[in-house]
Length: 354
Image (tube, rainbow, N blue to C red; front, top):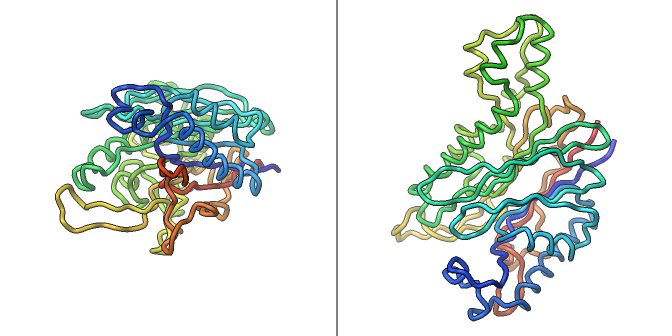
């Protein structure tokens, strides 16, 4: 049995120094202090955290968001202690020009396929990145979905429908992985072997990671992505002696398990500290810890039914070095002082081969 140590991190506004309309709008140009020296210092600072995690638990899988292009992602990985890694990244239509990316160890994984899914909204936003990897040791597939859902800049309530839209879309990607299509299902003979095929598909390994800009208990996560804290909902196999009716099967929406609920018990714990307003124009300030960054898994990955199992006790928020001040909030990068890292903490988990 070996370990696949997995990290997700919103690395916050890693832009290159090329001048563009987008970069100018966001103050990331040499004229406004975002020059090559500053960019490289930001990368060096990020590598300090990556290397710290890697020294404790060697990283095999690293999802990230808020990075402008694959050249920057390659540079980040190359300057870190991560060796023999490849990256998957696709330019999205996001109006800020920042994307999701996945880096993986070629010693552990073999690349199979990748897709990026455009979440349709009234303005361009980040794609959902879907990467399929094969674990070399077990020959098992692992589906990785990297997310960065719409932010709350216009207010929590006004922006909620956009995250619900993202949650619903992500849920439909999950359905495509864990279920047969109507056409495929109707071709199956109604026997025990077909039921085994349904269960094998239902138990494929999926890990969904990202900055969801919503809490584990929010509607987008619970009702639309169908990620629960309730283990009783998870072991959802079909009885081998009872092939399901077409209507029942096609309406079924597989449950997922959210690994981050345990952090909600402590009000002084989170991956991000939100300062703003509940809705735009609200005079009441909000200053709270949030668990926006999350790992969400399929029942197959939870129970180890397909040779991989995520250790729920291994899930942690990595705060070492980054925590700042009395409250211990994430120390974001200051381009004038060239100090700091990101306004989000990384999250870490371990997947074991069986």
